[in-house]
Image (cartoon, rainbow, N blue to C red; front, side, top):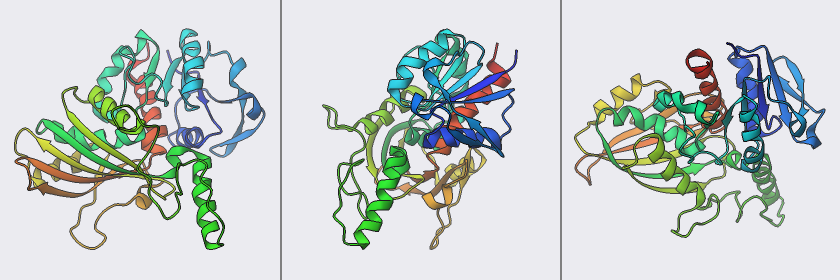
Amino acid sequence: MGINKLAVVGATGNVGREMLNILSERDFPCEEVIALASERSEGDAVPFGNKELIVQNLSSYDFSETSIALFSAGGQISEVYGPIAAEQGCIVIDNSSKFRMDNDVPLIVPEVNIEMLEHYRTTNIIANPNCSTIQMVVALKPLEDLASINRINVSTYQSTSGAGKAAMEELFNQTKGIFSNQEVQPESFTKQISFNVIPQIGPFLENGNTEEEQKMINETKKIMRPDILINATCVRVPTFIGHAESINLEFDSPISEEEAREVLEQASGCIVYDEREDGGYSTPVESAGHDATYISRIRADETVEYGLNLWVVSDNLRKGAALNAIQIAEAINEDYLY
């Protein structure tokens, strides 16, 4: 059994377009790629390699002859159409948060817990984690294999692309407007994003965390280990692409800077660039358009017995969303399609 058709749901959005781009780049093995979106986008053209795909209407699409569907159209769309596709025999890989904490839905980062794909047939739905969670666990899994992580304290610096195309345009327009002495009027964000940082991503919950912070906590526990203690602060910053994270770790046994660096240099999906000199580290600008999770500033935390600090950056549209979903699809095709 092979893949005949693969559909991208939300093909006109930031992540959907990136999915099409990566499918073409990696020459994904299937007979046909289908672009799906809402009725208002029906008939539009989206780029796919050196050609264009005509967008079809999601609401009238029959998934019964489609092997895999990559969903990136938001939780409300996934809630309605994900189960429909799955019931028609299509394997759904969903980029929204809708199914991530469902006990019957595997939450997958291929470099970390690919073995959990064995359980996808329970619902025919596989969840793609949050972008900030993905890059963090890619960096942490090799360290966890050396010494058990007791506690994670992470602060994120997340680009506007994580909030969608309109958010990126808001950053551009505000920046241009400030230089023209125009009044700033936030729309996608709660406050001015240009020349500012906003310590809120998603609504606030009863415990004081924002929704994004709670996602990182819950998802990391599901992917790695439920007894890890996690504290997260998620901040939106005025960059276009690429999320950064400052991660402080406490282990249950010794792990040296040298050991950490060596294992991360050998880890799948990781690139270590850590020179203790001016500019000897990775930033979101360098990560944009690339697949890897970049790790810098590896150093001991001397305030605790077994502590370590990391600086981690990654392209949130690629590894943080589109690429991770496609890697899952590749794994299904290679080892788990039956």
